[in-house]
Image 1 (cartoon, one colour):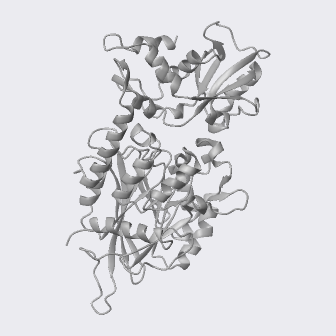
Image 2: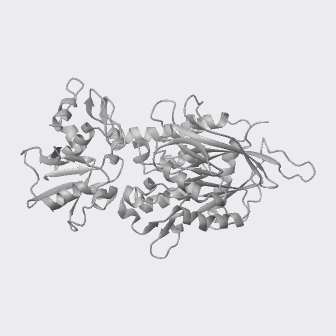
Length: 509
């Protein structure tokens, strides 16, 4: 008998069709079971007398922080190869369910340029059945998020997200607290959790109406509802780092949750704690974690058969997924494969060179004294060779704009010390514990007035920065934060014989 994979894809399509009719899988409250799933090539063993399914082998394959790397960071490690691995690595499983811990799309140009649409289509084809809401799901505002959720064949879950005004889950955006799958005679409850600090790690303006609540409280509210629906297994994909997830697992041991998945910190792990399996899939589709359970569909008894974490390597590409990725790569190349410069050596992600290229280009293009950005906004390296528009979009995927903030020297010093970490800076450098202007060699004067360039993300309080309180009427330049970088690179008129590298080194001086 053959394992279920192609039939699972058919099931997801069927479930989505039901969703479009307003019934079943995306409902926030328990709903009637789907009358028929699909006719399976391989089924669970059935009781000869009752015809009811007996033991079912169920495998959860788990990824998180995919960040749009559908084409892979390296050849052979993309979405198509991963789907191929899943189709062959679990021959004993009756059912393979892909689940995500969130942060699906912000990353390389193939995803970011299309605001995540390409990644949703890819995940649809890969057969995902649910995703937790990650902080980067809000990067293109809630209107885009709602559109992506409608395009997905799977629900986006955030049981701990409420509207501040009334305490209701934002179902109008498409976000649900949980979903219940009815497959092979089993009912699988999936409850999603979003990162509590989401307002500080996405643009705070986009989530200003939302509250991100305590993880344990959300589970204690919704697990009983899911239990009342008669589920056989509960799974919690959560956009939470391993350390916090471990504590949560201990705190809710009494709820008998079978599996927890993590996210946000890009960790790859597979472990057991307090009677549950804990999985982290790594990031960027480079890897995945899995757990296989044997479940008695008559009694609900379960046994953990196997679990682990694996690299995305050696897979035979799934042709349908590969076709989708190739389509979006063609569209990306058509829009963004335009050479703007040449590099002799790579510029590494979050390096001093990358920080200087970003912040000093802003000051080159706009009259201000200091520029700051957060290191986490630099999302990729720029490889040696041709530098294209796509290269810059991959490094700077967010749709930030530059804010011109007027501050006293004393306020500027408070800003520089207020974030979660020392920022990437332009125009000044830290010398012997003191901020010194590069041009004049003089320190910041507390009584002087300065103009600071930063992103609207940091201005609004992202990454813990206190900026808006010092200048509530800061000037929104409407300049996309990528544009000065592109303009500066073009102005260097670099060629393979005259690369950008020396000019970038000069920015560091």
